Length: 443
Image (cartoon, rainbow, N blue to C red; front, side):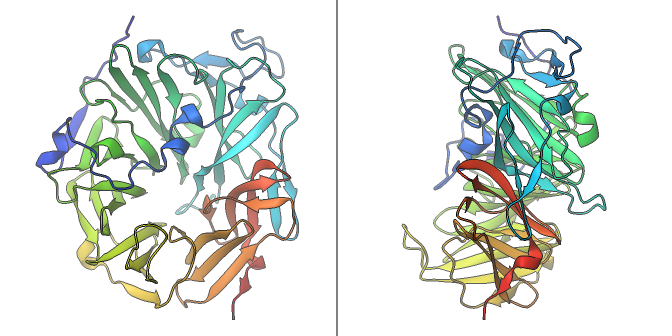
């Protein structure tokens, strides 16, 4: 039996004429490349869960107190933990000079994902990584999955339990980003036999989310037409944004408002990637033969932000600086004939952007980077991060020498003190926190 969710009060704002067409085709060249990490059904190991999955709160010292979120459609059951701190106690241990890593737990396999974030514009200086918990030595492959954030202060501020991905349909939480005291995520719900789809979007302060029962926005069949899965959430205190690769759109939301940006028929009709959010101002890469930066907001339609004919411009921003690799002569397979690194102070209005070239010759295996506290940082190899100081153009390297350590992705956060990156320690997934003081200048 399908449970119909109330959609009353939802205001849908379109941009150009193509923004409201539910039949839009995917115009993306490389769209959806982050789908695996964003859709929670593939985020965790198949044997995740806890003992006594169906038990009510028993008041024991290890019971997280699972209670279901009410009124989710399609029979989807997602439970929130009243006492998430009872799941496990995160421990950060040394992995060399200026290095900490997240230890594994006796009961859980702790799997950080390259999502989370830190306080960019507030004084609290908190940082959190999105984490999937897998039950060790479990032989019941129907056990639910558990997702949460883990803080650098050793806290588990909330946790959710969702059905195992082998069950029919979809009932799954996507990735959970953090920024300036706020979190956001979507619960994806699909009944493939009936062709019905819902998305429950949550957005709340971190210290309130574990008590939050109702979504900020519930999207139903009138808004969600398969396969329009919303992916790669970005969050700020003002809003939450998603890329929707199947529609070549970016969706921006605040309480009761959905703003659909881009897509065929708009000023930026091609596939969105690398969504970034500053307040209610969302930026993304519009990915076609050329790649440019597009943007929009709750009070404006999508439009170009920056681009150069014949180039691919791949950007990142922390809301203070914006930086990008500008690549010339893409060969369609392995890279560019040449690359430059550019930067500018972040501005909301494209007309106010003041680009400045940092490096005329930029040579890195990755042209996808992260901006933070005046730095551009990329994953160079499985031992090293490559860093460029945006003010001076000076280049640095930051790495790990221990044979047990492997770096896997671009950073989760870059602050004035540390750079955090997902990797493996002695074969198990973890998050490394590397002190910026250890970075070595390249002569």
